[in-house]
Amino acid sequence: MPQDNNHSSILFTIGTLDGGGVTKSLLSLLDTIDKEEYNVSILIGSYLGKSNKDVPAGVQILKNNTLSLLTEGVRGLPKLIKKGHILLALGSILRIILSTINKGWAGWWLSRLMPSIDKEEYDLIVDYNGQHMLYYMIDKLRGKHKVTFFHSDYRKWPYYYAMDKKYFEKADAIFTISETCVQSLQELFPGAANKVKLMENISNPRAIKQKSLEHIDFKRKHQYVLLSLGHICINKGSDIALEVAVQLKKKGIDFEWLFAGSISKDMDYLHYVEQRDLNDNIRFLGPVKNPYPYIKEADIFVHLSRFEGKSIALDEAKILCKPIVVTNFSSVHDQFEDGVNASICEMNVDSATQHILELLHDKNLQDKYIQYLKNHISDNTQEVNKLLNYL
Image 1 (cartoon, helix red, strand yellow):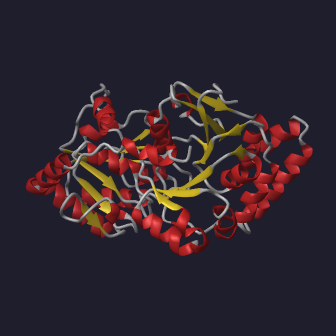
Image 2 (cartoon, rainbow, N blue to C red):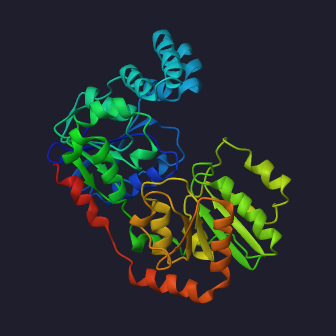
Image 3 (cartoon, rainbow, N blue to C red):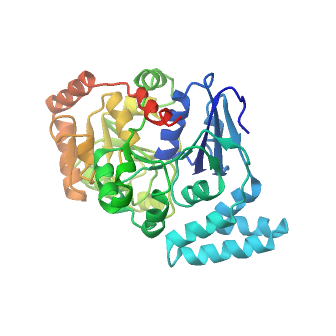
């Protein structure tokens, strides 16, 4: 429930705090809001994420065990049955089957199963997740104003289109994080085009620089250190990155490539490293609460993603003034200009290898990027006002 009737109340909803870019973006946003002025709560669908403890002080965390078990899919079924929720378990099975046919309908059905957990009316409800959490917010939560976020280029993520088209028009605003993402939403949802708003991911340069000074147990053993930050998965181009590592080793480059993030099951990355004799060159750090000291240690920040909305990891690398090699995903030019503040490569092994080698061997180019980034650091914490204007 909202904490103080004298203050405006804001409820954020998200499916999970799993440590990814959306999680980091939301935590930065929550940290920016003045808790003395606003009552801030967060409803986490599945509250087992490792970042739950990172929710800023003063933010009330709302939890519901049944809701959490429903959003966990197959993993939640045994516990639903054990607790006597037989009909919900059957409904969850139907949702799992539906998801193989139509993700939009599956998300809508999940929102039907999810219990209404709070009867209070909030001044503002912010869906930071989309999909089932959007449908749930619109239909089952009470708020004077309701806004939603979409964190990517919708043209690359059309799986919920039919249902999103229905629900986007019911929201007061649809926030997204880059001009490219704004354009794709306006093109695909003309009926809600006037509701699409730009609100950048919030990054606090002062806080990031301060955290980068924390001590880490890292000793440089190679001439070059490369770093990639984010989920280790095919969507993030981790398969390309490992093959690039093979090519760098063949060319005699003395390097260590650090990967900070959780490892997906879409490929056996550990086996690949073992099989390609990369154990001395690849280091998986796992999810890192504070990645900034590692970014600070790196010579080059490498981001080979297949698609992004506007990567918060790249914003952070820019704040720490790291030379960057990045792929040409659809929204890359919202953040970078090739040869000015980063090297932009094609989404293939040869191009990525070539651009990394060029940057490693060209100190003048590194210095050019570093100096440009130093001259263009900006604090965008005022972006939060775009959201607070709905109060």
